[in-house]
Amino acid sequence: MAEQAPPQELDAEDAKIVTLARSARARTGAAEGAAVRDTDGRTYAACTVELPSLRLTALQVAVATAAASGAEGLEAAAVVTDAAEVSAESAAAVHDLTAGAPVLRADAAGEVRGVLR
Image 1 (cartoon, rainbow, N blue to C red):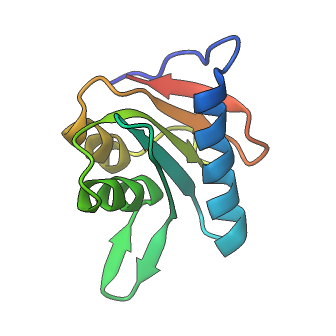
Image 2 (tube, rainbow, N blue to C red; image 1 turned 180 degrees about the horizontal axis):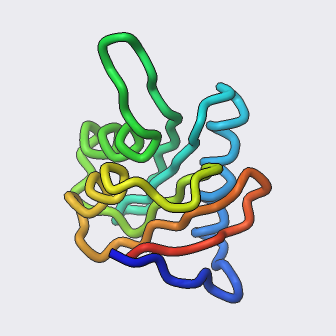
Image 3 (cartoon, rainbow, N blue to C red; image 1 turned 180 degrees about the vertical axis):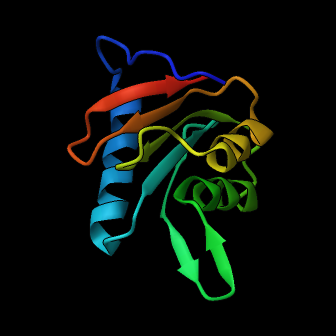
């Protein structure tokens, strides 16, 4: 799945999940921060988990939290990362709930650098 160019302008709801992802990353000092918005408009933010017995990407944690809260689908997801692309594991977690949900990849400043669909 190839990343597409970012939109010229981010709508307010997508900007919100980018901000939540940035906040989660900054609060914990984790490698990544992520946030997802479910089909009811609820948002879930998370960061990378790196324990000796458990390693999850920030998006995997955010998707798991949404699913555990009863979300039946996702409208969009965002990940703040220094990586040049969203990991396959992260994208798969989002697309397990909603195949076409866009995944915004943003840098530490919150600038969206690309979108996976």
